Image (cartoon, rainbow, N blue to C red; front, side, top):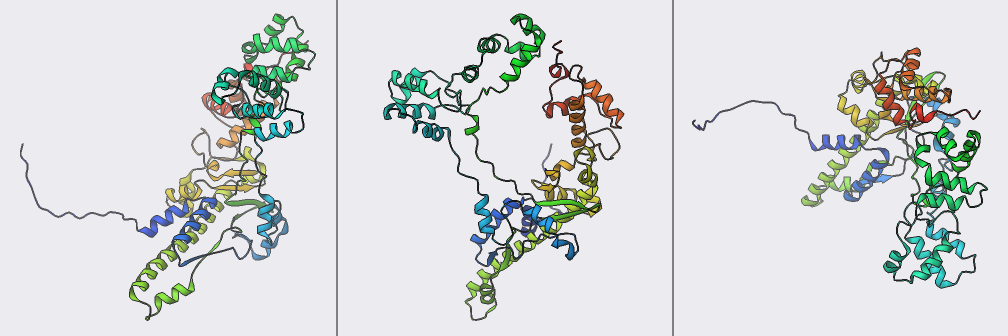
Length: 456
């Protein structure tokens, strides 16, 4: 074995991404909400950039100017409290109310009761240590040591807490929470027996077996279970979440006279501009050289960003148009009409690279009169063994499964094999494992668990 050192020349081609190209890629894959935050950061870092409110609420559309004046479109698009004239007031009116915590809610109830201050403080301390379900996951004695309070006081506070709303808070487990809510039910003993002794059988839908064990008619057991469905095993869960932030769609699509129309959400998109004062200084020979060089770098960066944003909007609109035209049947009939679609199909049609299409739809949502959907939801080609026709897409097949199950005879529910046959009758060919997967994703139990027993 020998090691030789040789000198030679080799010619090869390499693709080098320029900074402006990298920035264009980054801007393209940002959702509208993220883009707005990104632009605010860029304006703070680059004094030659100006961020001005959008001059007009109308979005960029592939429509004739006369069609853009359609008031019904604007009303539907804006949503509540947004008339395009006073956006600040509209924003304030749409801000969700501040979150009310469980501790706040309990405190409000205590204020209307004659509860001694010391006991009220203990109730609030106890409430603050409930878990997200509104339950107490440890003993009173353990909590007494942690908060440095007398166990007797906390036991008394616990008794008070369990009389407050939402009924069931402060229970040690979900079963106890449900029993607290059922205290006034005339069949409390039967409910307690079901919760303590027959939960496993109920979860497996063995209703005849449970009815025999409790010596109850099946019809009476059905009525009892219907009332039990109103019992909440997690009474404090509604206070554990955070107020949802309204989802801002990046694009809109709808049908007008059978023709697909699309638009971007440009109404809230700010207008990026170059600061004319700094631009003048950069071109003025009397400005110190180091200042001119600094401003020219900043101006070049600002122009690149403006171009990247314009390219993003142009690319996104083209992609949305192409996608929704392919899924026009969805706009007319809903999920059941979605057809399989590959990104490569859109890329070929628009003469783009597939990665560009992927970035253009990443994290983006489109609002239709069928609801708000991820753009990526319309791409599911190759998952169903069928020709790419309407009704063969993943969402379409899942919707058809849900519709078939909803219409089935609950006393003889359809198995997954039966669902395969039912879909085949509709012209949809899918494997049993595919049907099982979609059924589970939809949260639909197996046929055995869906079965309802005839009380007679």
